[in-house]
Image 1 (cartoon, helix red, strand yellow):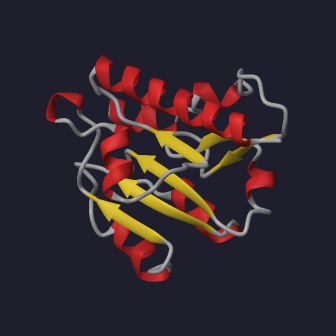
Image 2 (spheres, rainbow, N blue to C red):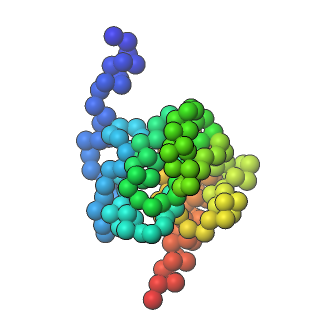
Image 3 (cartoon, rainbow, N blue to C red):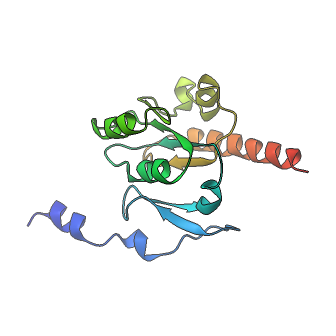
Length: 161
């Protein structure tokens, strides 16, 4: 047995610990255990929405997260990955043609591909779930994403009665 086989068959250490972020709703695991699945705050509330939007950066060859979102919600899912292995996104694109898009672009502030620029290009003003699974992204991109999501959050708070 090679080392890669041993590592792949070893239980994922991260699955042994609960999510450790504050959430006023139930936290649910969306997608498979291990790489691909993510903990989502308030997924039961998102399921109730007539429309919602998910931005998913980093899919490569694993789309169980996106598949579960599409099967259990009315969300539109926008998938982004510069290295996605096809035909994995193709299966979802064929199954949910009206609710899913795929782009081989990614976030890179050095090329002015910021989250805001990508949202503007897609004419999106809100994101309900932002999934990031992109190792090696530059630090400035993370800062830009954080600041943009912070601004979006406070725009919504101001709009609430």
